[in-house]
Amino acid sequence: MNIPKDLYYTETHEWVRIEDGFAYIGITDYAQDSLGEIVFIELPEENDQVTQFSEFAAIESVKAASDINAPLSGVVVTVNEELEDNPELLNEDPYENWIMKIEIEDKLELNKLLNAEEYAEVCE
Amino acid sequence: MKRTVLYDTHVELGAKMVDFAGYLMPLVYSSITEEHQAVRQEAGLFDVSHMGEIRIVGSEASDLVDMLFTNNTRAMTANQVLYGMFCTPEGGVVDDLLVYKVNDQNFLLVVNAANIEKDLAWIHAHNTYDAHVLDESEQTSECALQGPKAQAMLQKTTSYDLDTLKFFTFEEMEILGQPCLVSRTGYTGEDGFEIYGSHETIHLIFETLLADHPTLKPCGLGCRDTLRFEVALPLYGHELSKTITPIEAGLGFAVSFAKKDFIGREALLKQKESKPTRRIVGLELLEKGVLREGYEVYANDALVGHVTTGYLSPSTGLSVAMALIDKPHDKKDTLLEVAIRKKRVKVKVRNKKFYEKHYNK
Image 1: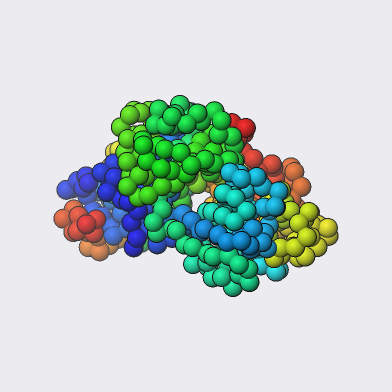
Image 2: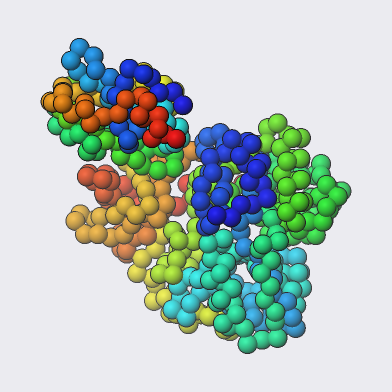
């Protein structure tokens, strides 16, 4: 299972990458593998307010629908619209293909997230 | 948790294992879509050893089966297979099953894994006949070889001429030199066979078929469901249940009113004559998304039904569902709405056969 060292994680299998003061958010390798083939993603909209550990998007695999939770609170700056037509990109490279970029509301929320080592234990 | 004889084989093949009716069963080996397409275009091999096998024998075996089963077993010839249900006096479904007639005094009933205990209790409770009920589930394994290439693959393992095995009939034959019961039946909408035998025999057949045919894919429960769904075959607990009758499910063909008596006859006949107030229809989603079991269906703001099974259909690419819809909203081309999470999406009522069956009749 691929768990990059430089990301923050949630127990519900989302990741966060901090870049230029923004947070890029996606699902982990473990998540895409458990879901199986992803066929559709219901993306949030720009300017949507998302809340830490609350659902912000839904992913449909062949088998079922799953909620995706926001690892941090904030306002959506950009969504990765490429996923609308090519949701399978999340299976192919879940770390390269982020789902949304948000403006971070409260950096202290990062303290509630897991590092790679802690997240690896969740996946065991 | 129970394991079938093929458990280690599934794990070696890299299957994702899930709990299904108390058994650890393969959900998917490679991908549901790949396995689905293999069955539609070439062939797929399923472990269905979790299914229940109940034998009814005795001088009045035929009377017992006929009283319990909705379809007409009296009209069956030996070596025929017939689909139907056990119903309650109210017309609800105890289980749907296949009846294999060996002769008037010997029937094999193949039932859903989750319902084995319930079915046995139901049969025993109504057995006022000279008939013995034997649960053969534990000593029987089963695999299903399905798809347009199924016959060619199976023919290499037997001297029995499979051309003579007609749709919904069965024969005792040797496969790889081992005694088996083979029927031309399945749950995919494709031509194919269901093979019953001892644990060792099914293990041997499963591994040999896979080793001999590189294009044959092991297939999990994931594609078993998408395959049966596309051709509108019902799944107990979804399109049929204790509260959904075969008439509502559109399975009137499996209920024989020509029979003078069977449990549920009166209620079902009444429902058929007065027309059911709801029925299972097809829905097609007119926007993006996937319809899932349990989602509510609305006509304007009135709740008129719920989705029973839904998928982005692998063979057609359509986002479709089967749903139980109140009349008169069940008419073809009626526009309805389905609640998906926080929003409503537009759907159109359509025929529930999303994909044409390719049986060898």
